[in-house]
Image (cartoon, one colour):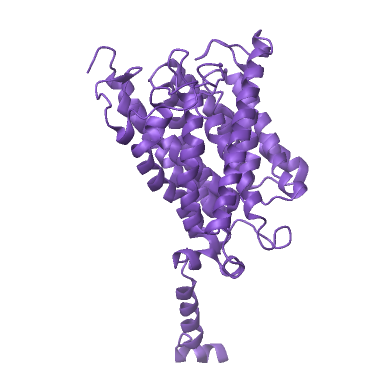
Length: 440
């Protein structure tokens, strides 16, 4: 390997990439536990299919569009690396091989569309969803990743490299991007049958807690790995991730207790995810004290934001808008207040003597990505709906999407019923001597 190569940094980033990959199955469990029994498998596989589709597209053209040399104005990469051909195996991104960087960023591309699926749970055709994932990553995610993540000495992406928008690990490119798309699809597909009338409670809170735990675990790779080196910035990102997530759990539960009178396990799991979302863009630019503030604010605001769907009448099934869109906006904007200028970035926020300049840059990134993702996602959703149809038939939605779309069910209740029937039909024989004792 050439001068500057670090085996330690390379091993660290590969481990982090594997952690980020684990987040997608973790998300599947998180979402799968939140839906009703009849939609469990569909929710799991909507996340899982992203692993397959996005991986193939990343190799074919995704990597070159996102991280190929800029094709002009910082908007998109060129086609030099179609099929990932022409990549110099000895080339470095920082101190790691460029192929290691490509593998790490692939995992970001995989989980982002998977996040969207929670907004349209219970009512989307699987084939239509799969087509949407392929089109969305092509038209929306790959360009936005170039805007935010591609750095080339001031000649890279137009948001991050050219205009100084700070997004350490994906607050705009991942969470605002996915949250805005989720809102657009929720509007295109419309409300679930029985929305605001029938109970639609999570069928398995243990699965939800398992999923949130896997997400929390994998998120250390998501955030710390974005330093692309096993160094002090990665260490601070790791600490900030833990601190903000813990604070967000407390913030969400406090709001929940005051507003609804109870501390719920669903609230604790959702608060953790809200904190993880909010600290993602900021973990490389704020202090642990700033992380506490970001976590508390995000936990309370996201808890309050999930009620927006009832107020405005859009059916965001699993609160993608309330957690990912709102959490991403909160975390991105608070960089403009809490950035210290002494972690992994030189820009300072308002509370550290930097004035309002960085806050303005952060607002630019938030608005641009939100509007771009919402508009393109709405157009894609409408095109699919009017051609092959995006929403399942009414009888399928009522009876259960698992059987109709996948010919399976998450739980085999027939075996349980058969066992009960056998028990009732053949009572246990009572010994004669015991019967005599009972009679006496």
